[in-house]
Amino acid sequence: MILNHLWGLYAHPRQEWRAIERNHEGISSSLTHILLVALIPPICCYFASVHIGWSIGAGDLIRLTPESAQFMAVGMYFALIAAVFALAYLTHWMAKTFGANPQFSQALEVAAYSSTPMFMMGLATLYPQLWFVMLAALVAISYSVYLLYSGVPIIMNIHEDRGFIYASSVVTCGLVLLVAVMAASVILWGHGFGPTYIS
Image 1 (spheres, rainbow, N blue to C red):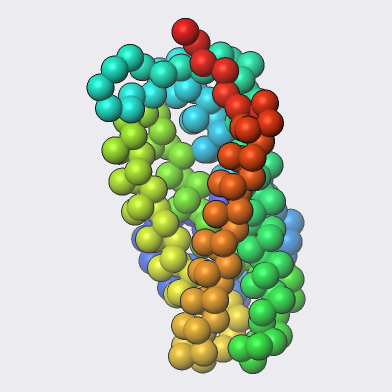
Image 2: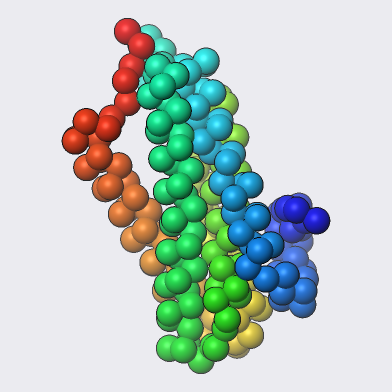
């Protein structure tokens, strides 16, 4: 079933990781999960930017033109998917260093399912207050890191001590990817691909 691990990752994460490890549904299942869950942030951000308006402290609401918001939403969608695949590649690449020998599908499962809270955080943008979205992002990142630490030893079939160091390396790679995506956004905005606001 599509998105069948979504509830389990929140209700009983360790048991859900073990279920994912037992079933190993393959790349197609992880890919379907990524493609569907990654739709949440772009769609919610588009709706908030065009129809609700962002509140950044005191002052008028900030809205984007539909065309500009659509362009940014599409870019966000593909950036999120690319970031998950990059994290999966780095997870797979580092595996031998920590005594694991996973298939790429296992690394993709770790990247896809541990990223889920960050994708679900997109729902918070439907209440587009900067303080609220930042708080939701902090909670989502914290839970993603927890999922990573709890899932790596199970999916990669390694001891928890070694899994902790492995997961710490993956977290570091994830933070580097996050900074890289933000830097790429700033560069693109500087070259004329920035948002167009409704005056």
